[in-house]
Amino acid sequence: MTRLAITLSTIIILALTIIGLPVAAYSNHISHQNPATAIESLPPTQLILFYGSVFQHAAERHYRTTQDMLDEMAHADIPEVWRESINSYNRLTTALVGTLDRLERQLNEASVLFSLKRTDKAEQKLDAATETVYLAQLQLEDIETSTNILGENLGVFITAPDSEIRAAYDFQHQSLARVRQLIDRLNQLRESLRTNPLTAFEFSLQYPTLLEVSAPAVAHPGLPVEIRGHVISPEANPDRKVRIFLDNIQLTEETVNGQFVLATTIPPKVLPSNHTLTVLVAPDGLYSSASRSMAIDISRLPLRAQIDTPQLTIIPGYIKVRGTVLHDNAPLAEASVSVAFKDHTVKLKTSPDGSFTTAIQVPFDLSLIGPQSVNITVEPVEPWYAVILAERQVFTLNPAIVGLIIIASLSTVLLLVSRSRTVVHTLPVDKAIHNEVHREAIVPGTDKKSDRKPDDNKSKILTAYLAGLREVERAAGINIEPQTTLREFLYTAITRLPQIRKPFTGLTVLAETALYSAHVPDENKITLAKSLNGDIRKELKHEAS
Image 1 (cartoon, rainbow, N blue to C red):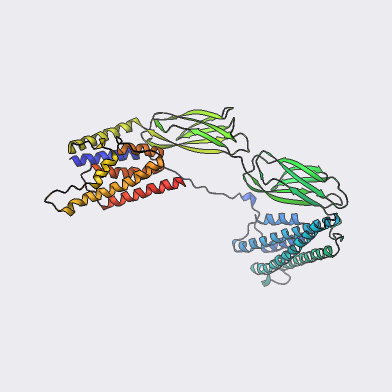
Image 2: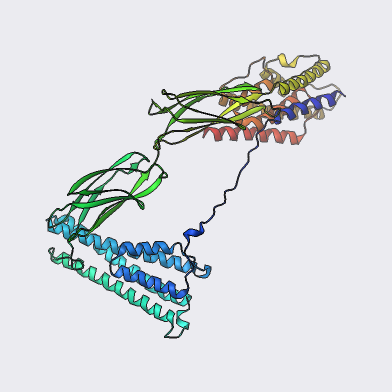
């Protein structure tokens, strides 16, 4: 009967402690494609005609138009059987168009630098153009090979010579031949500039434009950014229109003359990530266009929040939350603060000194016992500041649950007192455990080996608990006092270290059972004690990292 009462009391304590464990729920996010962004599926003939037109525009040096066409193809509804081939072909073509554009700009810049008597820099541009020509030739060879493979995949060679798809394929080859002629002519110009620096740029009636640009590597949404540059033309220095783009969004347009300093503002809704900043000089009469693109990192300025919450709250009641929001030690006023606990949310704004204070209601709930999360969100008014997401742990106690735990604990204590007539809890914890681990009470007349086995099993469990206890004391920065029970120290420790609540609770229960129960722990309990001790070490090590 006594053993049954002890067992029931232990079960009540464990059950009431576990009631408050939070349950995490996860939601799956399913992305959806917007059908308005896709273009209709293209039949084989139109696909071939499309790329023939792409190469025709490239041969005519309309590189921006060519790139826009290739970008549109990324949204095409390509049959699955051709998708991999088309995507690969698109990548090869995009790379070639970019190389041609870069080659022409290098030759333009070399021509301008020679006219300005900046020979060293002009020759550097020609050296770079030599490598670019070689790259363009290799890329074109890859495209020609891929064109033949694409023709086979689309069934060109099994059709009649006078079919529409065969005519489209011939047009594509003619356009590729024109691209090769362009590469050859650009290479001839490169060689001509090397031998005669005053060679005119024979592919355009316009004077070339050289553009030098510098911009910060990092910018912030809603804040201005300063861009410096220099527009150079060989014959004169007329007023030129300069446009600045962030990705495909035009930020500003101004007329400049020679050197310029332009200030523009990053749009507040731009997402923090790596973006492309482009400065474009528009063509003007006899003067050609020029552009420069560079990477720019858009980020938000970090904020710092000092938030205080109570470690322990009795429910029903209120959790008082107060804090201060700062940036570079300066207060941040009028920021929106949201404090959430369970289904309750309180919203307020920071005062001029950046501080906020509120109290959120904690309802009467039998399940609220143990560590609970209070979530704090700070959203600044200014778009250049980052949002703060913070979480604080508050240990909540329910009086009804505490009362049941006390009753169960007293029942256990009374049973143990009547059974052993000793007050074990008044002993220092270290001494109680030490005596249990090292005692060697052997009853005369009994088998020594069999009498020592239960003590050995208890010793192993208590040894595991002592090892875990030392780790917890070291991590929590507290020491167990002589008058403190194992259960009292458990509640104090998990308030400071909520991540070890589960393994340390289990290890404490095993230690109490080994100390005060008449039952002999088996090997499974020893294995479990060692495992829980290992879990405590892992959680503390993970928290420290």
